[in-house]
Amino acid sequence: MMKQGIRRDVIVAFVLLGVFIGLPFVFNKPALRDFLVYVMAYGLLAMSLNLLVGLAGLVSFGHAAFFASGAYIFGLLMQSGQFSIPLAMLATVLGTALLSLVIGAICVRLKELYFSFITLAFQMFIHSVILTWVSLTGGDQGLRGGIPRPAFWGIDLKDSTTLYLFCVVMFIVCIAVMRQIWQSPFGYTLRLIRDNPNRAVFLGVDIVRVKLGIFVLAGAVASMGGILLALFVSGAYPDFGFWTTSGEAIFMIMLGGSQLFFGPVIGAVLLRLLEHFVTIHTTHSGLVLGIVILVIVLGLRKGVGDYVMDWLQCRRDDKRESSVRADIARTEEVIERKAP
Image (cartoon, rainbow, N blue to C red; front, side):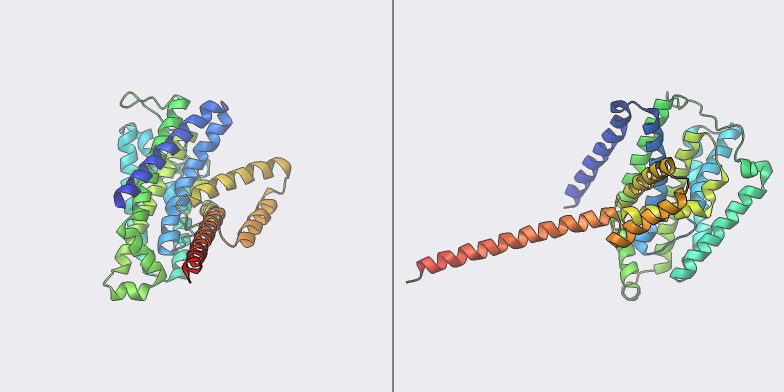
């Protein structure tokens, strides 16, 4: 079963790779490629947050802090001229993991509501540092001077097509890593902590250590989303670390679903499409967007992805039940015919 699951995941990864690579070439519009990069960057933010929400039941209001950390650390390292892109990416992920370790060591010891608000407090602190440390971060103007993209291993990210393909590959790699976490014994331990923490303690699970582990992993993956966005826009801006960015990630999870692995990516696509069309047709985009999200969430009472999966499961269960009933009816009919 495990080998079959890995084989299925590999097939899905290659299918996704083909879809993301093929779409911009089939529909040759730069706007589509830009849209997909934004979906990949914010999709990583939402999916990394869902490692906390969907697996551990920890709702973080400050997850965008690590998204901004990824963008700013990567941008500053590249502007120093001392790092290649792969080395800067590695240093950024490790640096953000260290930051999330420090923050998480405080946050994961708190109950759900307090956890949510202390993560928000840390995010606003980091956002304040970004705004006030003007000599380093550029303040409210963001990193000035752009982010250099020197060639490495024969790959030139100055070319827009190459940059897009690089973002696709990094996105798929991060998806694969999160999928393994989702399906691993570690992931099921987190589900146990979410559903029955008392039983987890009884079984000898160190709840604080396990929660801290997923907090660090989620922060590291979120930083990759920030890196991709920083590379694409050639900069880093305070909005990356503002509370509304964390709110968008939560909306993506609500729209797409928290129990379906790809739910947050579905939510990212839906939210970006809603923002696009609502902005075109009305000046009251925030109001209309909020109403649409409320209608979807309150109407379905779950994300779109979760709703569709539950509906398909009900269909399969109904078919299975109908098949069993038909078998029972045929068996009874045969018995009646053989009866004297």
